[in-house]
Length: 153
Image (tube, rainbow, N blue to C red; front, side, top):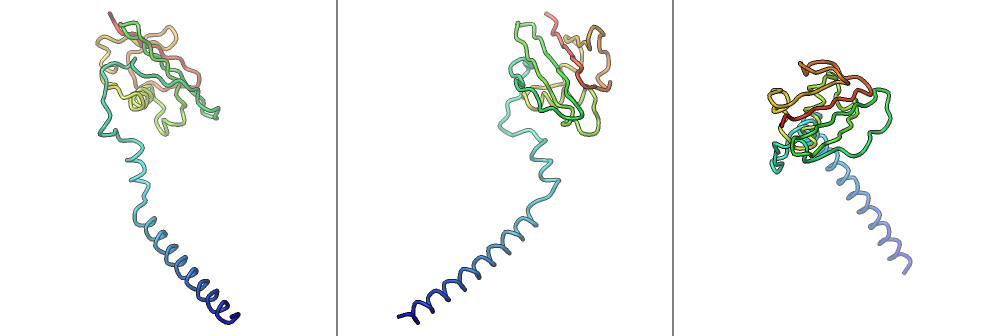
């Protein structure tokens, strides 16, 4: 009786370790063949095929304040002619290399699913940094900047 139990336990342990080794090798190769930084960037930065890009930048907002970090955050607010407003706070960490107003608005538009080109044209939008009117979106954005964009009526 002890001999059969001993043999069963030994076979069970051997099979368990063999299956574990096969699973480890399989998942290691699967990860190595299917993961790349390029695929991750595409997944994070591309628009979903199910996203409906809105023409109304005031339809969505980023409600939460970003976590404190060394690069800080800025606030970009959109005030539409319909009376709606979109108050957005964005961490400057997400802008990576180029911390410009254009990149910040593009990131907010990606998150809130609206087309940023309507704001960049400045046809019926007026944007201000404090009390200074913005004529070019290539300007650098700094910690605690508050940008307000108003839609003409």
